Amino acid sequence: MTKSGLKIGFIGLGMMGAPMAGHLLQAGHLLYVHTRSKVPQPLVDGGATLCTTARGVAERADIVFLMLPDTPDVEAVLFGEYGVAAGLARGKAVVDCSSIDPIATRAFAARIQELGCDYLDAPVSGGEVGAKAASLSIMVGGTEMAFERVRPLLALMGKNITHVGAVGDGQVCKVANQVIVALNIAAVAEALVFAAKAGADPARVRQALMGGFAASRVLEVHGERMLQRKFEPGFRIALHQKDLNLALQGARALGVALPQTALAAQLMQACAALGLAQADHSALVRSLENLAQHQLDSARSASS
Image (tube, rainbow, N blue to C red; front, side, top):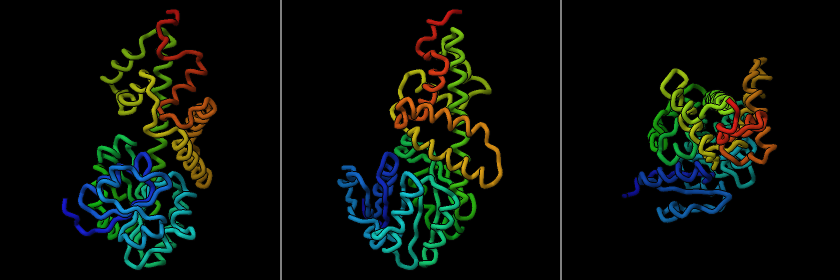
């Protein structure tokens, strides 16, 4: 494909970042990358240019995307000695697709904007599957002008792209998303463990529920993972713990009670204590199985 000449930077090539960057490259854009790990071979083969520092990416690219694990990682990449800010020139843009603290996001944006550059927070939802399929939901905070500037690039990585509001509002939306997902995973896990302990076949219970008002994507996808014991990470428990901690920190600051969120966070902490921090968040069911002393795959061993 002929290169368009649009110079894009991408920092953070993990489980989700690598396929997201790949979509930009496949669309014909020039891609400059930096990551702590090895650059995936498909990006190398596609012509991505490896930069040894985040500053190097910012010096070469007009729009720089970040996809990093947590707030301190974003701060270090942006403002470290060889960070993005040191390589920016007026008129460039930074788009942070990480899921981090909304308050810190607003502070980061102010510092980048002082350099004459746009800043958007654009956290994503959909996990590794959505990243690979370019079907992510993307929640964007920032000015309307900056949003319109990068929307064509976001459309290469996702399908449901929403300009939520001002800088930081994208992160607020992502925290809300993670609360809903966590509570749904906990609800599905509780329901299936209850069914199994009562002697019913949890797979058939799930099948029946999929045809009713309880149907959901979590019941469909994560319920199947629970039943099949497939806990290879699509989204790690450790990362979901981080997001729920952001929700609870924000709730304290706002004087809001999030009791169910706190419970879901404790169930994930129990999973981490079982050595499952790097497992998929559907493995939350393991903490409930531990409490019940009963696994889904042993439903028929329970007395009726």
